[in-house]
Image 1 (cartoon, rainbow, N blue to C red):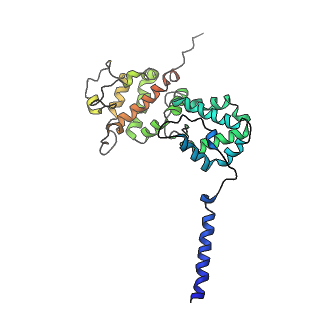
Image 2 (image 1 turned 120 degrees about the vertical axis):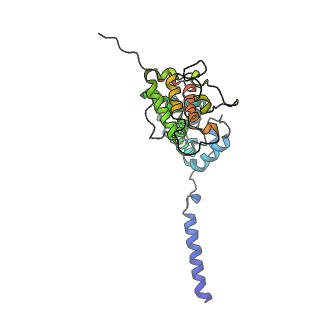
Image 3 (image 1 turned 90 degrees about the vertical axis):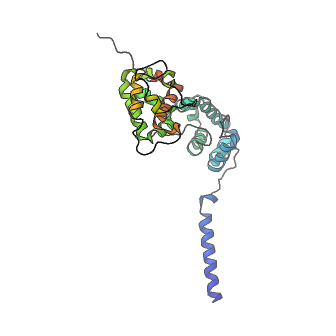
Length: 273
């Protein structure tokens, strides 16, 4: 009985080892690499140089190693990364310009290394890799939408997870029409906070006089904020910042900070002949 059992055990162990060594865990890179030379640093907490380095070493070591052997390659990748990080909220809009400034497209090894960083370690290295929910409708115009999409992707996606917030944003774009750009000013956000916090209670805000005032947004914005504040079914989140009206305002806070007012202005009408 022992003699018939032993081959079965050996076969099982060999099969398990074969499966394990076929896993990605054991898919070792062909190159040795020092990722610290290929990123621009200056990452904001909770990210750090270490988080970026570890990811590049785990996922992009081959591309990084090949780049290291090419003169000027590591410096070009690091410069592009630093440029994008330095642009902050406008990083996504400026990424192509940052790459062009370093002639990244003319150096295949640098282009490969940066694209690997972006595609596989974008989050760990602080790159703008968020993609706006395809369900998000156009915000006013192509230029305006491009500003919001490239600068406010996380806020838009969080908003579109709430139907109430989604309808609020779409209502504001429609109601404000040609004056939409003028709503993207600090006045929009100058609303009475609730109990000294950075957010406000929709019930208290919308129960005030419906007219515009110096401490509130334009009427077209206020109308939509209040119209859809209770549209989501079920209990409202206990945290005020998570409520639809504040999610919508976070989109506009981002638009203001990103300077989308200029991008959202309609071109002047051409003079009649």
